[in-house]
Image (tube, rainbow, N blue to C red; front, side, top):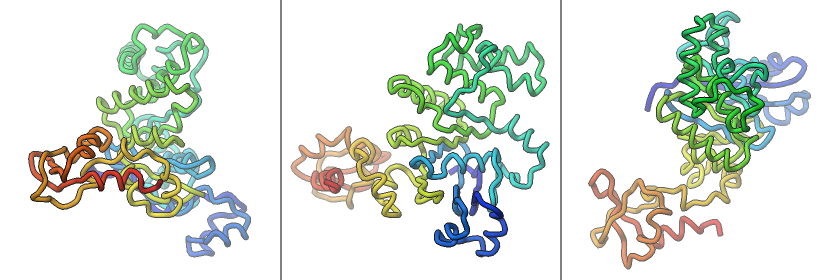
Length: 336
């Protein structure tokens, strides 16, 4: 796995009269009863996670779970009450205002649900704006903006104004603008949630295409588990400001760490999520035929269910286990 780009340890965000003093009086870890008795609102509670280079980590949770607040702490749009945040080797919470401005101008990209485009500027001018702020020469920033406009699928629309674009096209402009500074880390807060389902699917496809080209380090917020499954390398589920569990979608569904995660993932369709090697047992000499261990169960379920006996599970040409019809049916229908 690549090196961590962000290391977040024991981050708190409390709202109330004197949150730093309150945390100190409770050894940095007050319980729910103490927080409530003190009149504090715990937006983020003792959150720790790492985001590795080129990884997509999706933060999930219901409204009020703390996911947006945590991202704003990670980007220091708001100040954490306590904890530490290492951003690409730099102590983010110790950064001066000048250092923070430079980080945001050169290393952070941000995209939010509401596009916040400048209505009086063209697509080209919107995308080029961060470079204009940096003082980049007009000819250079125009050339760069045109490259990005092409990259996000808006070639030929550089002279359009936001009002002349669809919702999906406007979000592409927002994405393009955030990419203009070539950020190391990309924060996206429910960027597709305001779009209709068809356009949302198209934007997810576009996002994955961009990531396959750019290999950004990404923290992505969504409340849609299907979207998280499509996009994430790992998913962090939040509840009442607490990170309940971090893992792959398969990890969360097959090995939930808490009752909340189990309930949160209970209705996720397993066939399109689980891979054969997750369900397999030990190699069996009686096995005949084979399936790929990395295959999604949905893609090979018919072959497994129709087999009179176990099938070999193969990865990189080697037999790594076996799988039977009963293992598949038990896994897919264990919640029924």
